Image (tube, rainbow, N blue to C red):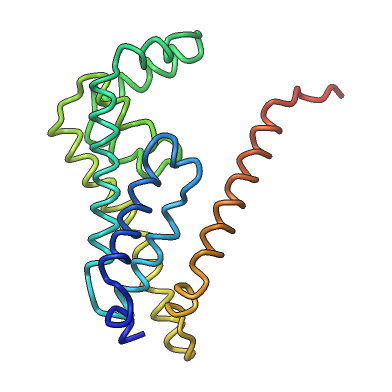
Length: 206
């Protein structure tokens, strides 16, 4: 894969990595796009090509998603609060999140990147609560660096390990990229549907 970037449109590749990281953390598309695939691919490409641009692309996409969520939250705080405060359970969750953001905004935002679905709503919530943009941005940067960076590192290590046994992981991933993305997305959606189904079933009486 040493000539990969020379044989492929570098702009298209970087745009795809950026878009994948962006959609992974945006409310709505995040249900259908799994950024881990793009993060692993970025790490693999960084190892195989020696270029840092794939890594920068996914980091930039993730940071842009957080900033977009924060902006949307700041502009739609009224409707968001009406939805969040509709039931007592939501009000309790809202109060807990607000207390965490107001007391430890940087740590709360950074930690949310490691907590799955919480990462999707934290930027919007922070914007709707008028949390300082600077504090939010610092927390976002730290969270993306750790949350996204770990998968980039896994991709780099996988590429390094496959190289030791003579297997071109990068070429395999790019050749089957569409199948991998569709397969992982379908698996995630099926898992989510099963979880929601099980969660909605009343407990059995014994």
